[in-house]
Amino acid sequence: NSLLLSSLSVSLDRQREGEASLFLHLADGGDVVMQAAVGRRFLLGVDGFPQDYARAFKYLSSAAQKGSGQAVALIGFAHCLGLGVEKNRENAFRRFKEAVDKHEDPLAHNGLGYLYFHGFGDTPRDVEKAFAHFNESAQGGNADGAFNLASLYLTGTGTAQSFQRALIWFTKALDKGHTPAAYSLAVMHLNGLGTMRDCQTAVSLFKRVAERGEWLTQALQKAYAHESRRPLLSAFLFWQLAEAGHEVSQSNLAFLLDKQGVDLFGLGQRKIRRPFAAALGEPLSVRVMKAERDEKMKKLASAASRGKLGKGKRNAGGEGGTEGKRKAGGEG
Image (cartoon, rainbow, N blue to C red):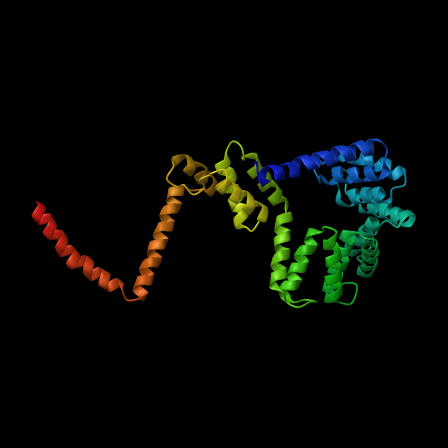
């Protein structure tokens, strides 16, 4: 009966560890595709791999020597962005050009588009060339290329403005897991650009962006880490994510409350107040008192609006007050 909690915590860390071990095994065995893939992960520090430039260049250089256009393009991006080497866009251009000329690599086309869009060295900005390379990259199936192409269509930069084409290419980028494309599509649906205005679709897309963010992964890992020893704090962290609309956290919180008996809202116990106080930044009792005060103020305002507040005062000061004095005097 361990819950969704256990299976999901395994999925995030152990699954990635297993994939990383498999990829490294294949890369060390000489698989060119895996060498480029592992080099990319070490270069960017993604998908369960630490950012390690030395190891990144080891695998990328090996793959590039064996004819991997993607590896050549990734080395180009390292020079372009200054990842593990001094930033040098002329060197980046040469790498991108090599990968395009020899391999027609979509990632390299995206790199050339980036350089032409911003300009580099003595080469001035050229948005039309940028558009041409982004188009080649997108047509080749690169998610970043599709996103950049859509952005140019959206703004009419280097080409005629077309909201419909922007929508198409943002969608293609999203289909390949491009999170910023989801945000752009959400804004377009929210404002009716290139499509009918659809708030429900916009909210769904915004939710996808929020659930893919690095902040969410860190928050989930923290919640899972406290599951065994500090279930109350784990429940509180899941509650925060549940309130933000994260469905997995909603299910996990429900399990902890219903099956594990975690008393998340047992405000009378000192042991329960402490983690809340630390997490919320002020004593929980203060927050409860404020909530009770606000509720009383709402009731008073509601009573006043119905004309009952004056009657209440008369009872308190008149009949109630007299009766109180009579009893006090009698008993005395």
